[in-house]
Length: 323
View (cartoon, rainbow, N blue to C red):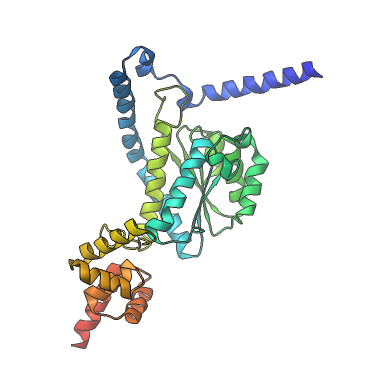
C-alpha cells in the first residue's frame, strides 16, 4: 500500500515538473545567475532592471485589457459585478484591488469582490492544497452567487492553477463573462476564458518567485481594470476622484480638496457645500458650479447616469435655453 502510494506520488510530481518546464516564469533568468555573489546595491539594481521590463509588457496587451474594461463597464451598468478569483499571491492581489474600490469610488463592497483559494485566512497564511482544489473553486463561486451578469477575472501567474481554471470553466458554464490574467501562456487557461490577458514577463529574478515581476504585472493590470472601469462609469471628474468616500479624517480632507480643485473655490465654500451634500464631493461640486440646490443636483446627476461633466454641461445648456 505504501509502495503504491509512493509510486503514485512520484508520478504526480513527475507530471508537475514537466508542466513547470513549460511555464516561462519557472525558467532561469540568465541575467541573474550571479545574484548570490553580488553586494546589496548590485542585487537591487538587478531587481530594478527586471522590474522596468514589466510596464512595456503590459503596454503591449492594452487592447485585451480594454476589451475587459468594456465588459466590466457593461456589467456594472446592468447590475453585474466584477469578481476576482485566484490563489496565493494572485488571490491576494485580487482581494487588495477589490477592497480599495469602496473608499476610492464610493461603491458597495459587493460590486467588486475578491475571492482567494482557502478563504480569508489564506490572505495571511498559505493554505496547503487550496490552489489544487477544483471543487473548492466551484463551491466558492456558488457561495458568492456568481451569475451571468457578472464578469469573473481568474488570476494565475503560471496560467496552470487548477483552482482558477476550474473557476473560469464553471463561470463560463453559467454564462458569466470570463477574463483570464496570467503571465505565462497556457492552452487550458486560454480556452477557459473569453478575454485572455497574458503578460509574458519572462523569468523572475529568483526562479519561480512570481510575487515579483508577475505580481507587479498583475497589480498593474488589476489597477487598470478597476480604475478605467470606474472612470468609464462616471466615477471621476477630469482626473479627480470625485466619488471618494469621506469615511475618515484623511478622506474628508481629500474630499474638501477635490471640491476646491474642481471648482476653484476656497476652503469655506467647499466645506459648506460638502456639509449640505452629506459629504458627497460630486454633489457639492455640481451645486457650486451650477447653483442648483441639493435636490436639483441629485436629479441632474441621475438624469446623466452619474457623470458629473455631462450634468454640468446639461445644466449650462438648460440655463442658456431659459434665458
